[in-house]
Amino acid sequence: MNNQQRRSILATIAGVCTLAGCVGIQSAVQSHSQRTEDDRSRSSDKQLNDAPSQSITTVIDEPLEEATVNIVAEDEMRFDPQLVWIKSGGSVTWTNWDDHDRHDIVSFPDRIPDGATKFQSDRLTYRERFTHTFEQEGIYDYVCTPHASWMVGRVIVGTPEIGKEPAMTADNTALESGAAAIFTELNTRTQTIGTEPDCGCPE
Ligand SMILES: [Cu+2]
Image 1 (spheres, rainbow, N blue to C red):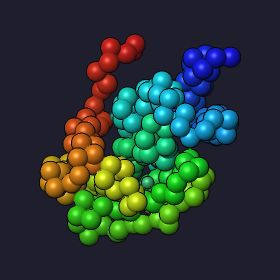
Image 2 (spheres, rainbow, N blue to C red; image 1 turned 45 degrees about the vertical axis):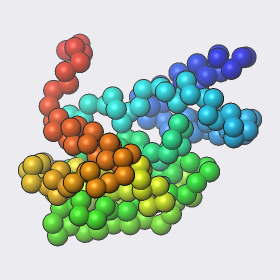
Image 3 (cartoon, rainbow, N blue to C red; image 1 turned 30 degrees about the vertical axis):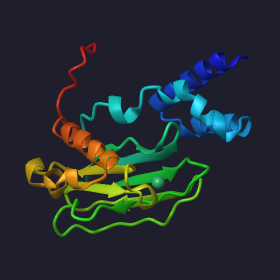
């Protein structure tokens, strides 16, 4: 099997698994591909890495009781999805699927609701998990401290008054460009939660 075919198959598996949520299989496939190639070739796997990302394409139409966020290191290290919406009292579990680096999840200063509980995980090793339960409604931005200049994400809890949330009114221009770009995108997406998808989808 040549590289093109292999990438195409991997991309297909990754896509199916994203829909089905079967992260374990996707991760196993990636581990195998990493074992059989040297690190330099990771950057040549662009096609696989360019597969549509859940964090960009998923329409968020209702809050979940429990949400799952994967820490991945394909084209770049990131949280996937970068935005989740849960009910008040719901929880989010982060899992580190990066077998090269450790990552943590730390509430972003001044970007969580007033009076809300801060949270901070240990630096997670490969396959390690961290769960946090969010009791207070609002918008919670978080960051991976070793990779703070671009590795950020957001949890929306309940149905807050979006315009008054510190996360939405914070000054993105004070951040490094990678994080600023993601928060700007997250602000746009936050405005659309709970709305109907405008995608021409079948009824
Ligand atoms: Cu990180």
